Image (cartoon, rainbow, N blue to C red; front, side, top):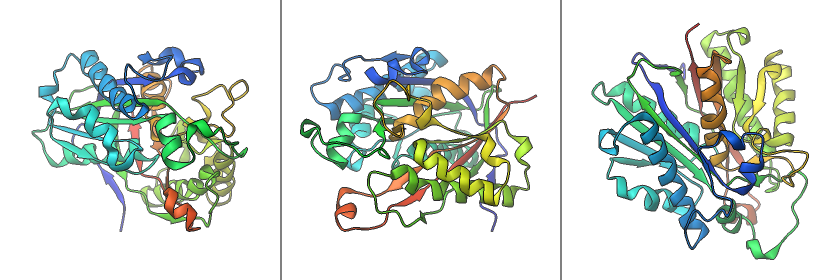
Length: 333
């Protein structure tokens, strides 16, 4: 069975917006964000509410840039890292748009875009839809690891959960870039149990998706300008490049990782790089979509990567499986 879904209808990026916090503003992409709050609170009294406000701010910004009202959206697909995606539901409830909440850990950005694109492919009368993804360092750290007041040391392989988010308005407009293909990822267990090495855990799923895509599509690696993963960080990216060099020689040279792009890796204490589902969302919105509009990239494969685990599964010594859905994004010549 061929897992690749080729879109027959136009699904284009009409508008994008990226929001972030203090560390994100200091990073290489900081000036490209639409808004950064240097306090990381976004005017709220808890970090969990701050994450909800991030999604609201990102979506409102994307709608304003597209000169659209929320009433023109047929569907909103969104998610975050909090239990039951409560940040997303509370932050976006006021829009009153039909809503699908999704959770794929750090792969949520691509999952949301994939689900929205598939729905727009199936429904010709759906003119506009939105996908929103956020993560907040302080909310995620105390949910998945230890209380942030604890000040526990992190291993060198650990990553820094980003306080970041992205919103994407997809539509039928004859704009670029466009999403042209979708590929749902498989759950891949690479045998990793180390909660401080999620990049390594996710790298096996990323390799599976990339290798499967080229085998099933018949495409050549020369067809693409970049193969972009979500947040493998330094450790996971090294593992992925090694796996690709064995199975798909040459493809490893096209690889770039959002987790290595968001922060100044030399001057910020983020260890192996950025993680969190807001990482790939913000990097796609702040960097790759604008660069594609300027024709610096023509075709990319974009796959956010997610580590499928919980605090309970780690305590029970369960392996950390990974997932990596993929979308193909391209512009005309």
